[in-house]
Length: 124
Image 1 (cartoon, rainbow, N blue to C red):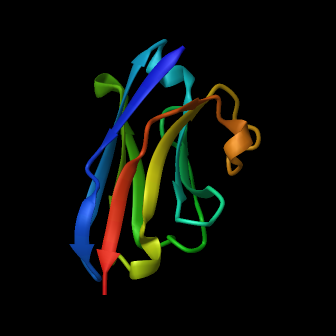
Image 2 (image 1 turned 90 degrees about the horizontal axis):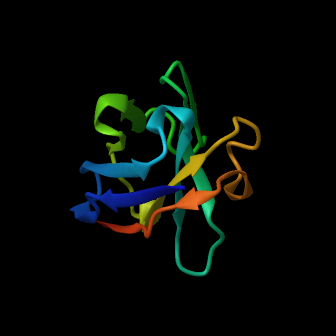
């Protein structure tokens, strides 16, 4: 079992930046693939970014490439999502997720553990 707690969401103007954090507790943090997803009202949860094991492999949704950066600090059991050049369409609840396998890492069904989510609102 692993517990995930996100923080760092808020209200920001278009073009601004936010950094989300997700602290994990429970089993060995380095055993997990860590991902970020988001869900806007009336839409399905969508993949944002994922980081594999020690951080050597990173994957991003096309919509956030070049603007968002995922990273992890295994010593702090924390994964981050740095979001720059934010757009109104980035508005959503952002969820941290953990997976024990590196298959299906861009699908929500590939992740067994989820945080409670943190709201990000980007105003135009």
